[in-house]
Every structure is written in C-alpha cells, then in structure tokens.
Length: 385
Image 1 (tube, helix red, strand yellow):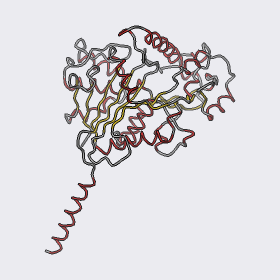
Image 2: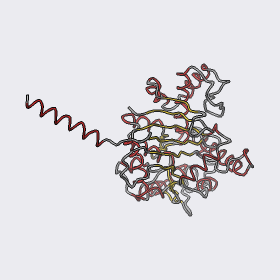
Image 3: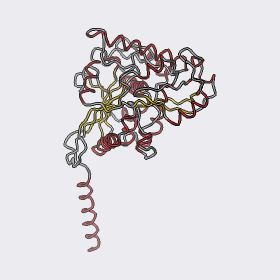
Image 4: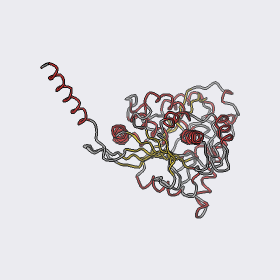
C-alpha cells in the first residue's frame, strides 16, 4: 500500500513538472507565408524555355514598375519571391529572440543577374553569389504586400497555426542565420538547410528567398517526417553543363569558387546570349555538376495545389478568388470542379496532397473577409495536434 502511494505521488509530481516545463501560450502561434509569382512565370522545362521566360519576365517587370497607379507594381519581382511572418504566442517568452517578425531573404538589388545574362553569361546567374544580400525588415515585407494589392492573382498566402515550440524553433533559425552573417550571400548555390545542419561554414553559406524559407520550415519541425519529400517537391535539380556558362563577375557579384574553378577548365568564355545553350533539351548535353534550386514559383504552386484540394473537398468554387494565368489554376465562379480536377491531373501540382490529412480533420479554412490579409485571402491550416 505504501509503495503504491509513493509511486502515485511521484507520478503526479512528474506530470505537474511536465506541465510546467511545456511552453504556455497566451494566444495562437502562427507562421504566415507570402509567395509572390514572377512577372510571367519562369519555365524550367529546358535551357531554351528558361532563357526566354527569364528575359520575358525581366522586361515585363521593368515595364510594370514604371506604369502608373494600379496598372503597375513598383515592387514586381522578376523571378518571384517568398517572405514570411512569424508570431509566437508563448506566455513565458524568456528569450532575446523577437516574438514577432516579418522577414524575407533578398539581394542583387542592382539587377546583377540580368546584366550577366545580357552580357552573354548564359546560366552564370545560377552559380553566382550576390554579395549585397540582406534580410528584409517588417516594413519592406509590408510594402511589397501593399504593392501587390491590385494584383491579388500573383500572391498566395498560407497561414500555419503551430505550437509555441515550433514557432520558437522557427524564430531561432532566423536569428541563427542572421547572426552568422550568411544572409549577406544571396545565391542559388547554397542551401540554408545545410547551414542549419552544420554542413557549411559562414564563408560557404547563404541562400535565396525560397531556400531560406524552406530552411526555416525544416528547422522548426513543421514538415516533420515528410521534410525530405516536401523539400524535393519544392526543388529543381539538374546536371548543369559548364559549356553553357560563361564566368562573368563584377561589383557585388562573384562565382562560387568550386564552380568557378571547374567551369574555367571547360568554358571558352564565349558570349552565350544566343549561344548553343538555347537548345530545347537539357539532355542535349551531358551535365557536369548537379545544381539544386528551391524555386519561389514551386512554392506558389505548392500552396495553389493545396487550395485546389480544398476546393474539391468543399465541393464548391464560389468562395475562391477568380484567377487565370499561364500554368496556374483557375479557381473562380466560372471554373468547374471538373476543370479543376483536370488541371490538377495535367499539371501534377507539386506536393499538393500534403493538405489532405488536415482537410479530413477539419483543420483547413479559407479566410476572406476575416483574413489577416483580406486583399488576397488566406489558406489557414491548423497544424497543432
């Protein structure tokens, strides 16, 4: 009898301590993703489509930036962009970390990539490091959202309700990344997820807007056991032939030293503006080195696919905003469930079935008038257990 009482007391004490050690929440903890599509969509199907779609997007974004009023957009992105806001509702926030922040990773403000392309660098931007990288301020992210207010079809917003600990992990990653100085390298070559796993030194670390966001999501634990699959869904991976890269560096731009040394052994430094790299097939060459890119537009489709599945589950399209643009879903009153199903099947939207378990558990909502961003609407997913 005495032993039973002692065991019961010890067990009760353990449960009380565990309850006290768990982070308490005074309000919801949320992570909001803002995904901005490029001006005309970047097409990675082949070197030829990549080249011409990039040039088209660049020209369109430059024109849109100077058009007056709602016709234009002073912040329109040539390649697309991803930023986010985290807001941690932990009651016992005993930390120097910021509890709430809007931020994104950006760089090459002087259009260095476009200059490299027009100088005949071919695919050189894909292996370049732009040394003017910085983390956006709250105001910069808000300004970009505001500038897209007249173009809601180009923005996807996803709100994830998380636990306090997940939100804290997310904030910690942003702080670690900023403290290291890795953000000064704005590049497609490095992956912040490698930085967080201790696989990169500060001298060989950095990332882009989408890869920075992916690193934060992975570090936080949101993706859980599906982390590798989702990261793959959001990534473009190809063996890049050195033959179609001409090393072009300059102020605010350098090449990754490993890529540079290997490219210079092969490249003839010829002008690649209309060179052989415009061939319509990747397999025209035997690729020399694998490049992995986390692309903002694939983030856009990842969320768009989740919206499509939400439409199908709810059996209605009436409450969703009208949208029709190249390679994207048309989710509006004029669209039918049949056409949406057909488009999902045709486009094989990346990782779109990740939303299914949350739909089945009634943890998904489409927010419009009650959205924190009513100009765009918000897909809300409760990821707490």
